Amino acid sequence: MPKDWNGNNSTNVVTNGFANLSNHEREVNDYYATDPIAVKKLLEFGIPFTNVWENAVGGWHLADVLDENNLLSKASDIINRRPDYIEKNEKTIQTEVIDFLEYNNSESWNGDIITNPPYKYAKEWALKSIDAVTQGHHVALFLPIRYLEGKARRNELFDQFPPKFVFVSSSRIKAAMNGKFDEMKGSAVTYTWMIWQKGYNGPTILKWFN
Image (cartoon, rainbow, N blue to C red; front, side, top):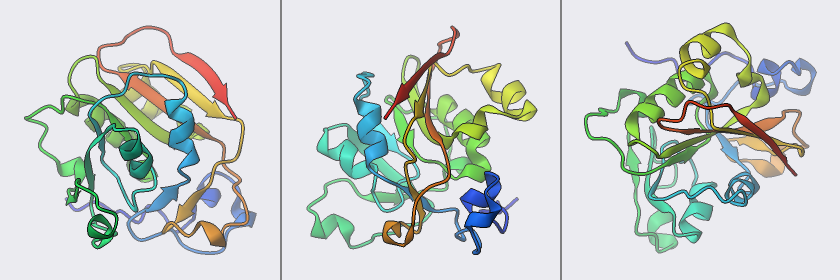
């Protein structure tokens, strides 16, 4: 069945309970680019990421930082949003056009996954990503803090696969529709990095970052 990538007709701030801050619909493919500072802060925690697949790469806002740190091995999205980007920026990794939720996991990814996933499918994205990586590797998803709530997420995701880490941002990091950061006045959303390590079944470690 084709997926409804539209989510609902509200922006991210509306779905997080800030209806007064928005007056436009969500981007058609749920594309909200992440300020690169988010992944820079993630890397400061020293988790030994290797062979990273950015599987909702969008406009390369996170992938560029991963590439600069010699971590990026694969980039994909449902749409190639910057088809001329590779040549102009002398990139060796192409954006592969992949609908990740339809991706065949028969060949496991021997590395880590780091991304800001489409929020409507965050639970499914986490489960699919955890299934895709090999034992001991990581899945790091940038998500609003409210995604720690909800019975379905607890029963189907967190109870089965507890995150090893939850890193909460003390600052309001921006996630901009279509990557248009200059059109944002600010952010009303508190974000987290939720990090799973495949095979880990211990307590979740909570930390904060500025």
